Image (tube, rainbow, N blue to C red):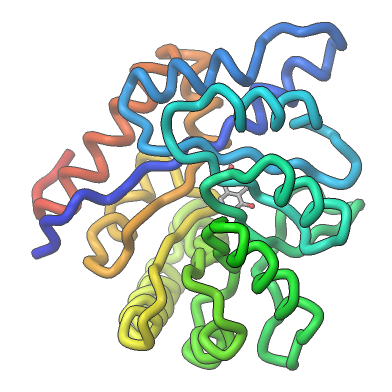
Length: 252
Ligand code: PXP
């Protein structure tokens, strides 16, 4: 049974989505980050997209300057974003694929086909002391490709598992969980630190949190959505409790 503390990274992008719907400064994603930390978040994640649809440059600057917990800068592997990360020096950078037309990140990076453009970027970020994670599909070959690219961390895409949960499709749920579990074991065996995220909510987090190799979960949309009803602090505490319960093998 896994006993080690599994970190909860709270993604605050969608506080910025609500702010930007009206222009102006409210609600402030940096305030949300502070509240999430006070409620037990181990880290804060923010995705500065190319089109700046939610988080903006000024948000990243303030987060990098003020946070007392690790900042995970989620970004496309572009020259612009790498340069910004090298200037802001967040604790971590999570490299994701990014398409302008998508509503959210739709899948992991395709690294098996020899994406060598990532290699110098991973190396430059790593040399600056930034811990690089690659957002990838839960797959054995992908774990090996991440190792070859010399990334220290992978974040396993849990979106397909969460879609199966939403559809109530037990066969697919079991298959997707098995895929995540196998990739986590294989990746950890190769020396990768394993994170997971995308689409996780209170009713889907347990089986993923219970996987012993997974050191960190990054969760955003469901937490910010739940915060409308119970407040952000309670939403974070409830998620934390569900993760802890799953790791200790009991119901939340
Ligand atoms: N991890 C990565 C790499 C993501 O792109 C996202 C979405 O921004 C998340 C985690 C969090 O996903 P969600 O907002 O669905 O919890």
